[in-house]
Length: 441
Image 1: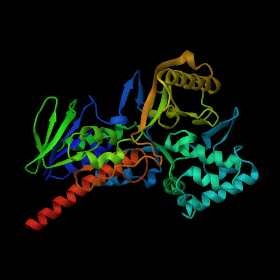
Image 2: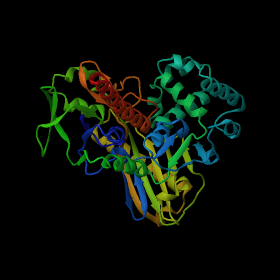
Image 3: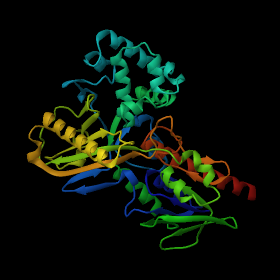
Image 4: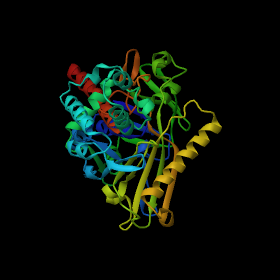
């Protein structure tokens, strides 16, 4: 069984690692970039480890990574963010984030009678009986809710921070998706953890697993440009090679790119429901200091300006030199309908607000900058998790390919959906192969 995997991000590497672990397979991972990992790409600069986005994992004790750790013999460590050092800023005042019952009692985000209401809502989510799951969107639920404005704002803010979207978009997320997400998160004993050593700790092991099988190849800087089916075989063309023959093809790339690659084929019409999917983009401001400038808290979320700053090195000591500090600021974006001049002004304003937040909580930071990177349009997820978008199924009737990635159907959100869908499509192929062998024998 010869398999082509198009895309070398988390999903593609996961699928390839499972398949290459089976001696009855051979294949190639095609990646158009010069490096693997996709948006989980990690690199070193001046002693700092920079990620294109956070390497935080939500609910790691209930996460697909736990299965992968056992099945693929992965070895990694993680460290939980200290919940007592997670703060919200509202109207210029810092207060504990209401992430558990203790912090709910301490926070000033809610008034005393609102805290009772919110504790009841959390209990209902944990018990999987919350009415939210019966509403099409969070906004529809909040419009019908008799909760106070502060409780409604808190719901919007929680969904914004976990899905990396604006409060306006948070209101468009499916109530069922939110209820399931928080059901798992509230039951987790490890709600927010960082993988020590960043995503490279995981991706390097997946790559090593693939390369252990000499029948598998990784083709960097070689994107697939066209695909056809002839005599029961799939023929792939790249810039440098033509008519590469495979038995199966797995797409492990954003749905928008899949649609584009297949637009001139007979399968194009089946992908129409997914061609207008929008992605989740944020502004990311990474900054590394030569010394620890200040450690007011490990995470500060500004409810007024819709941005937050994580002191990544406070949880993951491996990302900064021993005496240094690495912060990552993220601003939620909502500029889809703006003209180019408006977008530039809007993004520049976000940078200014981020730097003002640095000034407020990390005074004197400008004198100790060793590394700075501002990504004004960084993709967090290839499909924004709002009701107007549709996740790509792992299998589509009358389309002979498999699909995986964070924009596909799978367990969890963000990186977990990439891992879980990559694992699922690999197991589907291995199961099919086992069934064929049993029929033959």
